[in-house]
Length: 185
Image (cartoon, rainbow, N blue to C red):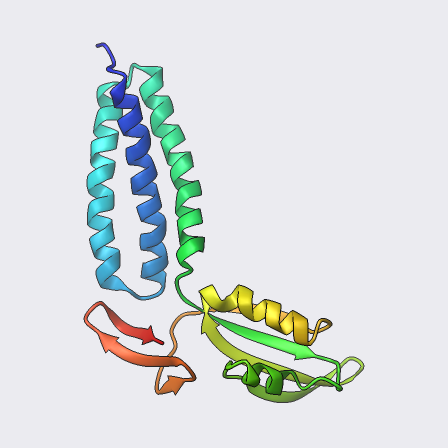
């Protein structure tokens, strides 16, 4: 069976689409967004069935198989790039400041970050420990600001499943039909 040249191109781009969608769907699912995960999953599988159908129809053609596999690999890359770009979710940032001359929490509050401060004992004496929950897309800006204020501080960043209850600074909790809980600024 002859392979029309457009088939490998369609297979390649279909795989990029469905694998990218799978990446976004998994992130949304991990963040508890069942509705959008389900909608994306529907289209992801629809595209996948078409791609695998064409690949199987032309299974004796190396170009069809190559386009299927390379589309998958490219889809992984594109999916990761998309996910990094939209930066879904929240992070808990903990900053340990050993410089007693710098009031990091006060400085961060001056930059409109909601910060909880805890006094701690470090290896070389007292430390200031600052906690804040922020949108993932705000992490680079937060890190830059912390590094400008307290360049010798130590920072850890952890994924947050969900924020719950009340309001947290400019992050206000509300219910929507699209998720159990969403955040609006």
